[in-house]
Length: 189
Image (tube, rainbow, N blue to C red; front, side, top):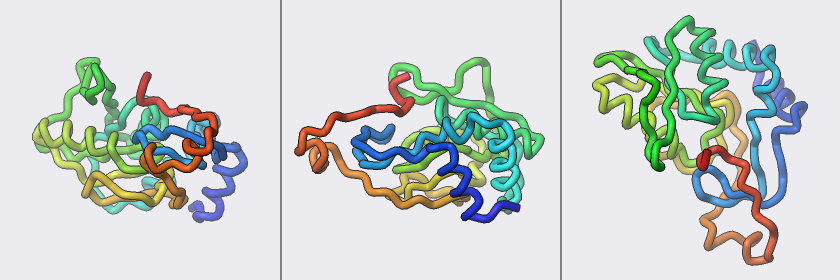
């Protein structure tokens, strides 16, 4: 069992929390970016975090689904901990899709897994694909919840809440001050 303080310590040890001027995957701007890829560089840490996520769940799961690219590593680790099948979605012409012959059977109970949730836009797109397939989203797991708005209504199981401010680009004081903008997210991949 990992406490929230132990999870936060692992995130800090990897220097995953960055400060500057960032364009988030959601399109919003922030002075804080959480680069979960740094946390997930360690297979041992990733496996321990996935085990903790599974320990905190109270739902039955048939399949784990994650948005590419950010959610893939943690999603796979959670699927492995659950001993369940794993699929991921990808953007094609800007829209999330199931590719690579992945299918989600009608009636399947699907757990959506993401690395960081700011608005939950990518999660909402995966939820829409799952529901369009006739399956049920039984929950959403995230390594980090930035504690902002949420575009999905499924039960949410974040491992760690790290409230961080974000702004619409037109409201960003860092833009107004001429600060250089960094866009480290994966949406444009």
